Length: 263
Image (cartoon, rainbow, N blue to C red; front, side, top):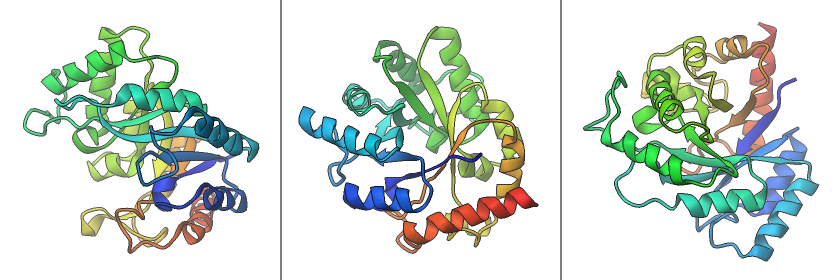
């Protein structure tokens, strides 16, 4: 049975009450919580606020898949990873979403040798708390599955016992020429959950309303058959205000999934 979550990126600035109502009205089991100063989830929350937020989400029967930070693991500048890991632990989240954020001038699509940024990522994973997972999203410099697999393989060999996993943004790997089956084969050792959205490949993979694009959702579900990965709707309304609101997108997503499963 498909378990569906959504990211609060799809309802920017909305209060917790609105998020819980969306989840309870649309058969949603999990959340990705965007973490920023303009959201109800941020690293400045007090201990009391953290306990209250956790209890309200748990009482609603929801699981927090990720605290979605904007930490760039490969970046030169210091990154607030520890503060986000502490927040995730306090909220009972499975992990903290991070971006690779490697310097594009040094990143190699082949991923055949570690870049200076990847070495910085190794150092950060080595010294980070392992109470919750560091969840690397297939994004920016490591959007391709083959590139992310190279980094994860490096982590396996150089940081034994690390707690880094992958959020597979399946639209990003698709936009880099990998079919869902190919990307899954590359990443399956490390995937924690799978993000989905619809995109128009003829318009530079611009997010579009569910069903209006050409993302191969049927191929993804076929590739995932027999697995137990969560699906999470990464609805980028914050960055793409042309998209419909989540109260329209969530029912459309269930219909999209159901139609693909029947094909």
